[in-house]
Length: 318
Image 1 (tube, rainbow, N blue to C red):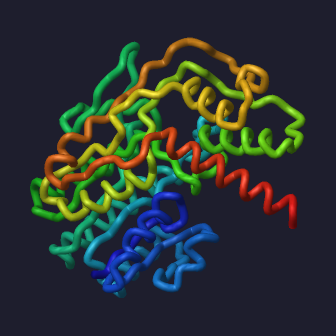
Image 2 (image 1 turned 120 degrees about the horizontal axis):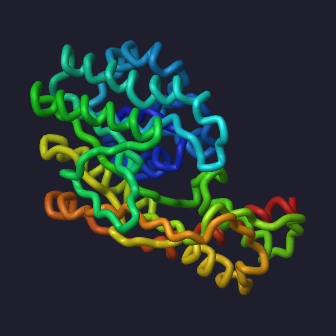
Image 3 (image 1 turned 90 degrees about the vertical axis):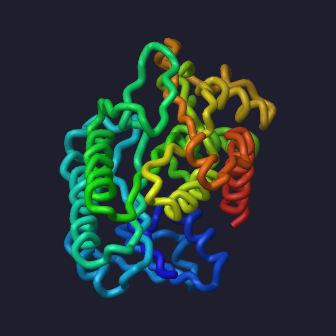
């Protein structure tokens, strides 16, 4: 089995590689625009560092993978103030390259599977909790969500009208020790790790809203579901989520209590208005593949904090 991972540098690609490496028969290839200190040490993974949209055609014809996992994504964090500057990159990575790949598969590789990582940003939050499944209508309110929706609609067309083995997995918030610091959970776990080690911050932790709710999952669970969904492309798209609404305040409570502190003494926030969550319904994936969650978001936070403590301690002792 040949697997091609497009976007082989983020947390999901690292976890996916770990799962694929369990089968010694898997040949794993990854396209990466950035270095990954984790994947660089994997002898079983061949990393191809090429401009994505310019080289994807040559790569597909050279390696002829059985399955393409499309994890590449151009996006912004909630702290980015100039999102418009990223729109061209979002269009190229989140849609244009997907379009190129599907066209090549349709022309030359009818049996190749293609599994795209979608996003909960393809939908819009409301003034109450909204449950999302595979039949929920798209209503993106971000450019990132719009480009993900464009790709998903195109994938639906190629699967339903042309019979390709392609689908979209709709990811909600998912965390792991590989999460980058631009994301809220990692900012929090790194902050409390420093508190535990009595490393001076020099400043308070700034949070936009403590009463924003989201559907948070373990990235290991989500990627495991993603891999199972790739084996069921003909069954259409899949939502992969915890189905549980968790607030930023819940995250703060657990994380600071874990190191014996009160978040109220260390956090400043701009807004306490309640912002309800989009909640994913993964019943379809569970029914078809038997997928189930093994970790809660609190299990993941504990692992992230312990990992950050270990990293800071090693740096201090170096």
